[in-house]
Image (tube, rainbow, N blue to C red; front, side, top):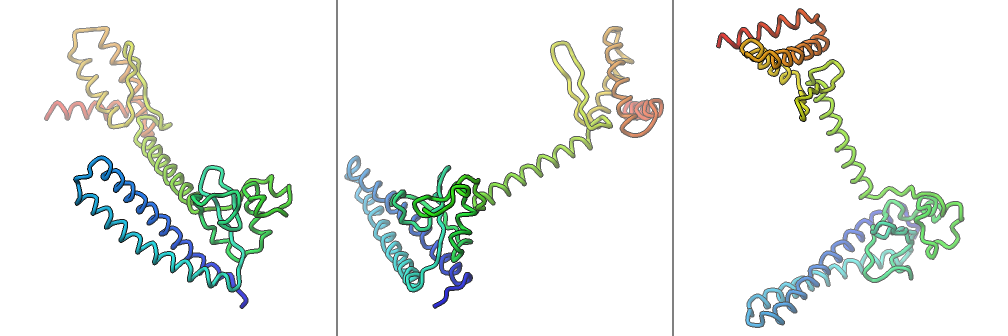
Length: 266
């Protein structure tokens, strides 16, 4: 029969899912078998625990056998009229292979099935795989192609790109919020040196609160040096708030003084 792209993708999508399940169940069987060996060696009297893991192995083995039958059923469809496939080895420098039987791989090698290339011509696969193309699976691949970076987009790459985009969006939103709430027109924070320490004012609200607290100190303190220091800070705060709010220094000062007056009336 003449295999269509749609048909090849459908079969390979099912097969890929079954292969993933087989790997998962195989791992669970090995884990349960390791538990049996552990208890039989170190705690042979814990019969119930050992039997529990044996039952688990038996149950998983049945599931594994059923999975193998499903894989065999779909493999039989493929064997009737094979089509091209592409598989990416799952590791940091994995290559793209035409099958899962490449001599450079092992029985334990894990693959990501590149279903989007099922039934595509080999040239298309190699062109996109670039330097990731296996030279054993694709011996005729031109050298200039093998020297190019891979253009293959995998699910994990999409997920990583999406996660990065979300992180970037959150960071940009946080920065935008900080700038909007900042005590300056430019969106920057205000920094004041207080001895060995640097005092940072990050929001307009905090700047107003700082001004009010300083004003109380200015009017009630008997320390002239401290009063002068806080006056300088309040002038800087007032000037920056005025610039941000688009008013004159005197208008902003009046606003702050009214706030201070209302605070005293509470």
